[in-house]
Figure 1 (cartoon, rainbow, N blue to C red):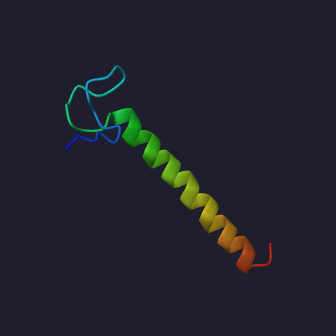
Figure 2: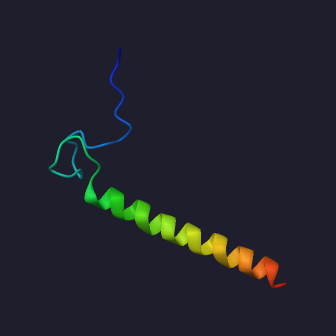
Length: 52
């Protein structure tokens, strides 16, 4: 069966030195993107519940 990588560390340029794990930059982007998305959802719910 073929091995699927899912974009995790495969030694490509820009990836972390630790093999088999996601790069630090990728983890940081997920954390920041998740925080921004969560902020938008929460503020949208608060705005909808309070009548904008």
